[in-house]
Image (cartoon, rainbow, N blue to C red; front, top):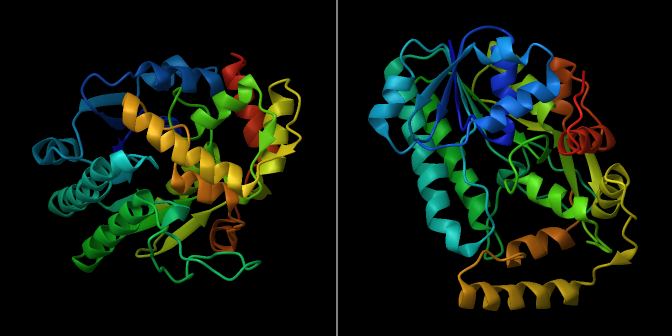
Length: 336
């Protein structure tokens, strides 16, 4: 029996699918969570989805619920901890710390108490350090936070420290650091927000660059790493380094839209996030763009997945393949 936290998220639902294809799996979700997205994801990929769905044992618990966590881990061999709050809105800083940091500490403690065989923790490239311009970032890139570091990055870094604390106390654990995860999932969550906006069309593209990875790759690498006789290591999961211009072009073509031709200027983004901060402060709504996302859109960054490739020999989906998969999902087309 394996346990997946955050089972209705983009990564969580894909991990759940990989686990269900191998046998019984326990899915931890918060009370009143919409589980229908898991059925949609399963049916998008597999003709035998109905059979695989019967392998899921649903458990209602929260990473902040210590008793619930302890109960969910009884009889569990591996824990795949995917639950997290992903946000760049300043108002979510407190919630991110509670869920991402305190929640991970609770998962680590429960794993130690339950004597599970292996914990696989999902971190992020946000917790990876920086390198000089033109140098790909790796697992060894030095971490150095400053006033521009987002609350999300700080929370993911602190969460990793909780996992390392657990390792020091005897926990077998591995950490994965995926970049921007592209995959079928619930509307309005993580990268699906960007996909949905581009599905409607856009005339502009940001000037920066980043890396993307298919959710299927993240899930498969996580299960493969959990089976390896290694602990205390972290692995970057990167499908392809791309400019935002190319990513937006790929999405536009996949969605049948005209690719954007107007490059956003730095001054446009800086004005935009300030206006959005004012608007959201007055209306109480979520900002469309924040200071952190504006900086991300401007930055040139790339990452290396050589460490995990050398270990697993895994072949990652390209950015185009990942985008085409999401387009098929949004258009109601199966992949089989």
